[in-house]
Image (cartoon, rainbow, N blue to C red):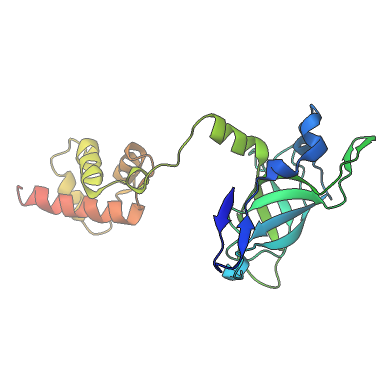
Length: 228
């Protein structure tokens, strides 16, 4: 697929990673399953938004820091040791060899050109960001990307993630205790609304800020006392 370059005098080709699989396409083996701790991979992204007139990405070398086979935190992800920066999230993570040989256990396959194996998608760095802290990043495995694509799974829309004000108020009213003086208790000094807040957040499936829900609970209590 050819895309128009920023400079009319230039042109660029956008090619799929699969185009660089070479001999790997002829091997009935998922080479990503052989990725192991201490292997090198590359993250292709735009740290700090750095790019040039060609739109080419920056290649950041990373070392696989945890077992991809065991996963991390019971998820289909693994950690990498890499000095990544903002702008790398969503970047493809690949194994790359410009010379062409592919090593699968004790067997080496030779190809005529560069070979790239897609290993997953870089997500983010762990913990607070500092030049003096461990630079550890998270990579979601290729198998998870395949599951999302094959399953036709789409990300939810913003209004499907955050509950609307009407949804919040409806959840509060549905969860409101039968006690006649509950509104007075809510507004009483030192009264804890933890139980009702918990029930409302459970009904909303966590799709709202607890502080906002607490404020709405108090507003509804005032309306109930006013007979509205």
